[in-house]
Structure formats: C-alpha cells, structure tokens
Length: 112
Length: 113
Image (cartoon, rainbow over all chains, first blue to last red; front, side, top):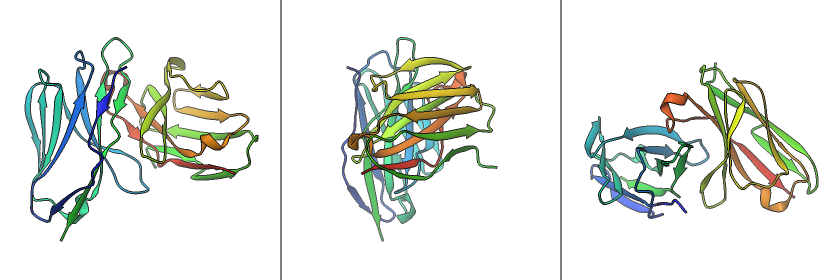
C-alpha cells in the first residue's frame, strides 16, 4: 500500500526560527510532491510543489526533494505566528491515476 | 466569485437519512474530487471525476455516490447515513495536466447523530 508518512507533531518553534517539516513516501515511482497548509477549521491550500531532486525556494519557504531517500521536506524561514497551521505533504502516485495521496499532516506552532 | 464552493457548510442529521452535498467550481478545471477528512485530520480521496467520467473510486461504501451533471459540478449523495460517516468532506478541483495542484472548497462538516 502506498503511504505518505509525516510526524504529527506538534512542532513548536519560536518566532523567527526555521521550522523544518519532513515527509517520507513509499512509492518509489512517485513523480510530483506538494505541500499544503491547513489552518484550523479551514481547507487545505497549496503552498509549494516540487518535481525534481534538490531545493526549490519561494519566499520564506523552501521545499527539498531527495528521491533516492524517498524524502521531501519543507523549511520555513523566519517563522511567524501566522505560520501556525497543519502542513500536509501530498504525493502523486505513479501508475496512472495521478491522484495525490496525503500524509496525516504535521501541526506547527510558532510561539512569540 | 468563490473558486470552489460547496454547500452546505454544516450538515447535522440522523442515522439512516439520505443527504447530498453540492460542489461547484468556476476555475474552468476539468477534474473534480471528493476528499474525506476524519477527526485525526487524515485526508483521504473518495472520488475523482474527469470530463464527467469517474477515473478513480477508492474503497468507499456504495452508499456514497458522486453525481456530475457537468464538468463544473460534482455532487455527493450519501444514503443510509451511519455514525462513522461523521467527518469533514472537501470538494476540490484541478486541471488534468496539473494533477496534485488542488483547489479545495471550504468543506462540509457532517455530523450524524
């Protein structure tokens, strides 16, 4: 069974620190990787996508992908209290359906 | 001018009832989805429709049935509701070439009593 694993947390970091969120996946043929942010009581919102090994930066966010290790991470620099949310890792399965499989999410708390 | 809208936002009903949740998107996307998010926040795919054809159907009970009158709408019908159906149901849409880049509706909190 194809799985996407995340530590549920909560991950607590002080304001201004770097938050590091991690995700591993089981399907070695996975092609596309996404990070969604979900505030409490709200719907998930796409914040990053990454398709090839290495780093991809967008503002304070950096996604990192290592397909050999089946590992994708999200770094949030200069964390703000407004970044407090659940971060969901999603992976597009290989083999035709291309429907993203979500991890259970990591709860991030940024305290002032 | 909400991109993906679903109604109702809250749905409280008794066991055994039949209910529907409606979803509409105005993004011009050709693929729509229903996801179920349980109390532990696990987001699980239920259905996906592409150009009015079901392209995936996970192992959900046949009490759940998607209905798509056109590519802008994907409604969810649930028959004989059970306690375990209580969850948040999210509608989402995407463009086929960009699978994985989903736009979600605001969710429907279903409570079965």
